[in-house]
Amino acid sequence: MNLIQASRNLNQAGSLISGSDTSLIPESEKKKFDEFKVKLPEFNGFIEKAIGYSDVLMKIFGQSGPQRYILLFQNSSELRPTGGFPGSYALVEFDKGVMKKFMVDDIYNPDGQMKEKIIPPRPLQRITPNWGMRDANWFVDFRTSAKKVAEFYYKDTGILVDGVTAINVDLVPEILKITGPIEMPEFELILNSENFIPEVQREVEYERTKGDGQPKQILVEFGPKLLERLSGLGKEGWVNLFALLVSGVEKKDILAYFADSRLQDFAASNGFAGEIKETDSDFLMIVHSNIMGSKTDAVIDNSVSLNIETDSSDGLIHDLEIKRKHKGGELGFYNKKNNDYVRILVPEDADLVSINGNDVFETGSLLDYRKADFVSDPDLERYESRVKRVSGDAEIFYEGGKKVIAFWMITEPGQSKTVKIKYRTSVQKRIYVQKQPGLKSEFKLTFDEKALFEDNLDSDKEFQF
Image (cartoon, rainbow, N blue to C red; front, side, top):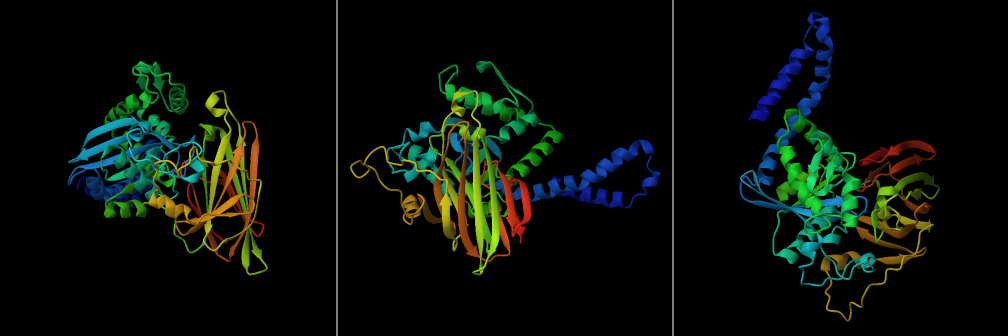
């Protein structure tokens, strides 16, 4: 009711302001008046969104019964399909609108309890003998990955969850700009927006932690302190946080899956379900997966150019060029070889013409699964059942109604790598370009030599030809 009344008040204020005689306003107050007039639609937009969210938020926060969620902290310095490797997670429980539990843990801890041995995806078989929650975000479609995370967590712990949310850790420094620095005396650190990522990365990778020596203890200690700081935010802080979260949804820094179909529909309609977009137009999505490449995605510059030309045979020729420049860094985990398993999602009727510049990567498994006591995952088995190897050491298969062209890009520190792909589609009047969560990339699009876009691809884009 308070939100609805606030919306009415803002609408009334807008009507009064639009009808005001500005000549009656003192000169000394005109600047403030003009600033408020400009800000008013933004404030009203926030309130309207909050009203739309309120009923759903009550359900999410357990107003009608206890709710339990997994919160994945995805590190985009080690890219995976839904944003990054989830080295840490939190189990969050709500009841009657109150948070009853917020437990941060190393994702390897529950995985260590799994008794069932499951064959992992083929590109992962060289780095891990079995599939677990840590690698479950293997599917491009977030709902599919999140359901697998929840399934594996149940196998690990016997605990059922009502949903899975993923947050890109790059969002945390932006939150710290709102909350201010947080002291971590047990680690002799003050974490702020500038040093959060490198300091936590250094702590985790080099295991300098105090106390029980757990490499991710710093995140265990940091989580409750951040929540405490958030709970003390004033009105302006909450407005800024809400604006940041809305921006985070648009940039794919926040994704969510809910077992409740109503909540899942809400996530999809508001753009944070992370599904592969259904379109009747041309389509492109480039998805990177860092395999045994440490945290090197943090020091790689990505750029993509797509030139589309009308073909004489009543189709469209696409010349796609992917470039990656590995800058390395002063810390050891930045100076590793980046092994990138790339998936290009295109329309289902697309035909691959050629691929050049990609690499061969040895993907042999660590053991012989035929002789070991391992089982196949039926979802993964279906996913991989249609994989077809084509010329140029590439693979073709399907996901989410799209054709997938998959290959390897291996980039050494201090070097660059370029892969060129040519494919043909039927004639379309527009193209939908979907952003991979966590990926920072330049994108250039031209059609019949006409420039349509050249900038950072920080959200999904649709272009008309």
